[in-house]
Every structure is written in structure tokens, then in C-alpha cells.
Image (cartoon, rainbow, N blue to C red; front, side, top):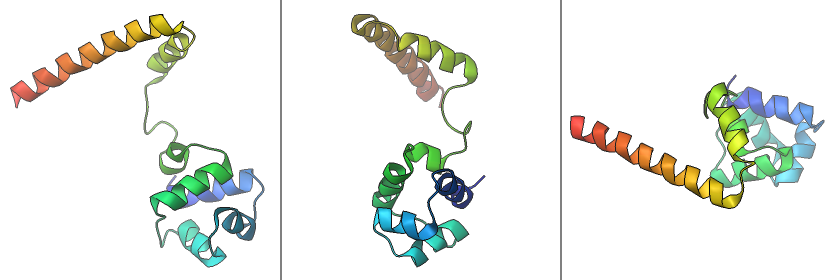
Length: 111
């Protein structure tokens, strides 16, 4: 599903008419119709206002559900880590940072 379809789906899920959503984000309804038709792309500011009005992240509007982010196994692990106390999360973050740096340095040295 592309950006135009996601905007339409999210708008309908929130039970907004095109006019109501356009007003909520401070646009002319004809511009919103162009976004939904795929003939125009929003600015970052409009994307931010769409996200707020629709109650979703900008990623939800821009990317398909599994297009970005960790796979299911990592997502479960990240959810578990989110329940760690702050000090334990710092340790996990430091470990991940070091592994990412190691991986990136190997990649750069191979090129």
C-alpha cells in the first residue's frame, strides 16, 4: 500500500471526511485530495500535522507495516528490554552500540 492509500485508510479509520481532515491540518481540501490521489506529496510539516491529526506516527503514514523496523523476533526482544530498569537499558544500549560500530567498521574496511 502506498502513501495515498495509507492516508485514505487512516482518515477513514478516524472517521474524518476529507474536508474535516483538511481543516484539522490547516490545508485546503483540494490539496488533501491531491495527496490521496497520489499527484502531490506533503511537506514534512504537513506530514507532522497529518500524524498528529490521525493519531499515528509519521512512519505509519510513510511506510508499510513491515517495511521498516525489526523483525518479529527482535521486536519481542525490544519489548522485553523496554521493561528493564533504566540502568539495565543503558547496558543493553551500550552493548548494541558497540556491536553496531564493530559491524560498520568491518563493512567500511571491506570496501
